[in-house]
Image (cartoon, rainbow, N blue to C red):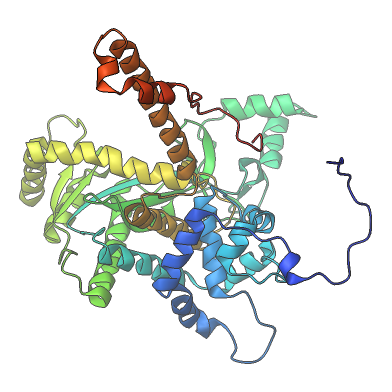
Length: 469
């Protein structure tokens, strides 16, 4: 065989379609595409988004099915930005097959994805989220009886150094420069400004400062203790299956006791839509139990849950002795919650809360890549988050149907199979060593077969393939 050399010739003007490179397709995306097509996903979203387009005028835009599939890929590939999604689409033949693009058709550019997102309203993205919930209900992955609620922070696409005063529009650096001159420093350096900023108390008030390009972002302390402009994302999770029933994006400094009301309203609306469209008796007629951490514990929250007929299992912080003068209803609600959460059922729910709620955040924010958002304003972030979490719910469906929830889990399955085969081989080697000590082995007629097995090469998880990959 002669050595191959790179060709520097000009490309052919015409290329036969049969000779163009094609992908065999990623097994996960092939299965997901088949599931979406069987359920009529593309036709549903085209009908849903038809009101945003003119019937005949203008150049045809990005197909709604392709747009939502792009956002689904953002979760499955762990890509946080629309620019990164567009690059990944261009780079992968298997993802082109998943989008349903023709050979001569280019994947959508990031500007096209962004323009389509701005065109389609948040209610349509919410409808797509509910469509996925209906598919979960049909497969028995949505109960709606016991819910868990928790929240976390999302780092905003805005820098603290760019904030301005709400009243005058003055930048933060100009404000510090004035303070330095007032203290006697005529030409302050960056070190002088940093020293003054450290010594100044209450320097990050959201009442005084705002980011000019993302007014919804608020100054808050993150999970790691650092201070950033951020938003808050809140999940309501089905404690029986782990499915996210509702997701909302709210102000970063909004307390949990204030934000839970909006999340519960979204949860009730989603479950009502699923029951109305699906009519499946597997979905509970109403939410009966709710578990949350101590950030949600307050008299108003417990009264709200009792008014909705929901039994609460909310962890209680140590507030010391409380006075219940003229608060008989709040006292009963707090004592009932305290009694329920201390029981065996309450303790079990709190353990499952730590597992299922943190799992949804870990998959969507950490491995899913959405801990830091690349969009501005709460409305745009909510659109992306809704489809991102819908993809997480789709992964639960795929895990039940095909035993694989994400494309990357196939890699772990292969390594696990190799490890299991290696363990089986080691066990057989030990068995051969044991049987060689028994004089009746030749009479049993099994030593020859075991010798053939032991002559095979050992399996290893890091053994190279025939191609050297």
